Each structure stands twice: as C-alpha cells, then as structure tokens.
Amino acid sequence: MSESGSQEPAAAPNGSSRPRPPVGNRVTVVLGAQWGDEGKGKVVDLLAQDADMVCRCQGGNNAGHTVVVDSVEYDFHLLPSGIINPKVTAFIGNGVVIHLPGLFEEGVDKTLLQCLETHCVFVRVLGTTKKGIGPVYSAKAARSGLRICDLLADFTQFSERYKVLAQQYKGMYPTLVIDIEGELDKLKDYVERIKPMVRDGVHYMYEALHGPPKKILVEGANAALLDIDFGTYPFVTSSNCTVGGVCTGLGMPPQNVGEVYGVVKAYTTRVGIGAFPSEQSNDIGQLLQTRGKEVGVTTGRKRRCGWLDLVLIKYAHMINGFTALALTKLDILDVLAEIKVGVAYKVDNQTIPHFPANQEVLHRVEVQYETLPGWNSDTSAARSFDELPENAQKYVRFVEEHVGVPVKWIGVGKSRESMIQLF
Image (cartoon, one colour):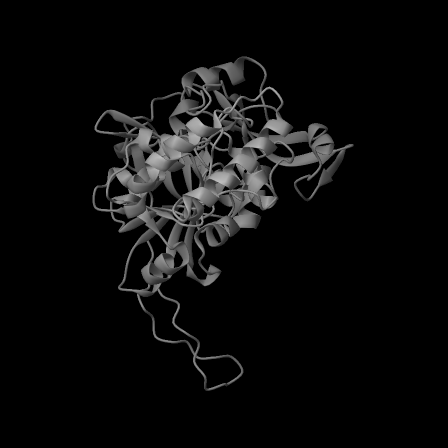
C-alpha cells in the first residue's frame, strides 16, 4: 500500500518561489469494476493485514462483502472488511448512510469510528434492497435528512425533525407503518453508546493524512456500473461508487488518492433488473451461477451471470484510473472447454466507441466476442502465476492487454491464501 508521509513541499509551477503545501499520506482505494459482488472484501482483507486504518466512504448496509479467514466466513454490510485485523482503526465516512441497529448487530468494537456528518437510516423496508438506502439518500439531497451530529445534539429538536421526516415517508409510502415514539426511544438509547465512537470527519481525516506516515485503505461498496452518475441508470444505487466518491465521502482532497485497485470477476454477474449485454440465459449462465455460488450476500437473490465484458471494464477504468486489477474467481472457469470475452459493442450493425448511457440503447447492443481456449484443469491449488495452466495465464494476459491495466492479483478460491500476487 502506498504512503508518502509528510512530504517536502513541492516547488510551485511557472518558476514561482512559493512552495505548495505538502501532500501528506496517500490512501489506497479498492473499487468494484462491474455491477458489484466482484470480491472487493477479499482484496481489502488482504491489504488490511498491513494497514493502519480502513475506511468506508459510501453506500450503506445494502453492500455485502464476504471474507474467509482460517475457514471462517465473515459477512459484512456496514463495517469495512479490513476490521478483521485487530490492529486497524476502522472509519465510516460522511458518504455512508448508517442504520444504527444494523451497525451494532454486526459487532462494533473500540476500533470503529464514525463521522458526525453521516446520515441515518430509519426505515429499512424501503428501497431496492429493502434496507432503506435510496430513501435516505433522497432525503439527504432534499435537505430533510438527519445525521449523527443531529442525534447527538439537542434530542428534543432531533425528535421534532424525526417526526416531520416520518410523516414525509408515510406520505410517499401510504402503507408504511412507523411507531414514531417507539423508534425515538430506541434512538435515544443509542446516543450514549455511539458518543465515544464519533469524530468530526474532516478534521479526523486531515489529521490522519497529515500526521505521521500511515497506511490508509478505502473500501468501496457496490461498483462502477451501479454509480448514481455513471452506472446503468436508473438501475443503479444512490451513491457515487467511483473514485470521486472517495473524496466526497471522506472529506479529503484528490491529491491524497494513491493506488486505485479495480476488482474484476473473471466473468460478469448482476443482481436485479437492468441491461446486461453479455448475460447468458442458458446452460453457461446456469453453470457460472452454480459453480460460483452466485447468490447476493445482502438480498439472497440469485445473480444473473454472463461472459466477461471488457467494454464495461475499460469504461470503469476511464472513470477510476485503475493502477492495477484484481481478477477474482478464475477457478470458476476451470471446467469450460472454451471461454468467450466481450471486446466491443455494435448498435445497428455499427461498432460504437463508447459505453451507452441510455438503457434502451444498451438493451440493443450486440456484444462482439473473442473466443479463447479453456484449460480444463483445477486451478484452486495454484499459489503462483507459473502454477496456473498455460491457457489460464493467456486469459489473464488477454485481460491486461485489452484493458491496458496490469493484473496484480488472481483469485482461485474463497480463502485469503487463494489470492495469487503477481507483483
């Protein structure tokens, strides 16, 4: 993980003698490059072994990250996956939305800190994942949301604002039942429990970035194609899951962003509805779903499956500027005699140079595939690149060449030990 400590001030441009302020520590970012469920938690867990601090910057408990350590499986929704390392400090930034009961259900300890500016989730039965995420981000944008700092200030004023917000929800969702007084009693009980954990987010991050050298890791939730601005709108999440969300969701400047790792599944999956150009609604899709155990950690829904789509990955790279990739679940392809990879899109028989923004256009896309030979052998015991079958190595190199980003890790199983590091 990259870090710079408190660097010497850089010289100013145009020959000016005034130095620029020091950059400070740089954060390492892990982001999903498809529609989520790529295995970000595993990469974060790996990097967190050498980290001082691990952060969440957006999303809520609609995220689901699974990590396997010493044959024990951990599922995280709000907590950063790196919290398994007892030496790290975990920080939940202002871009995250928090359901306090859910946070404590996951198991909170003294190493977890959260930001005063974080918005609260009050009604979990709403939204696409029934976690209340979309309605909270809507309230945030409408400037009627309630934050942790509001809960910890004057509870009488908080209660009045809560009642107004509850009535707004009931107006939008007529069948919704909210026990307002009961919910307020529960929230009041949380005040003393969370007070020791809360920090002013901007000040806390500034001190972390400009204090002694420190390795800081940021775990993205969801993924590029679910980003509210750049994803397959309207079938997206409610936050920015691309690299810009790191800055706005933690209150830090872009100059402190260091390595940006994109996590890519060796095939493509998607939960829920929305265009999916490389989807295989056939035996191949069923095989990938079954072998990959493709069921959502948060929703329990089966994931739709298809071939790896490099048009998507290149699009995610344009937005995020990946410095390296983690290619996960390569072992799921072990049984295939041949493997297709999407390399271009055609619309109305014309190759298009970009990823379509419009859903109707995306539904009409014809994916242009290249067919690669499979390897028909078990890769799960491989612990180095050289131990992979030749055709598996060629598959990895094909991805690198087409995306223009090196693959740093290859996943061939569920455990931490099954991540092959190339450099």
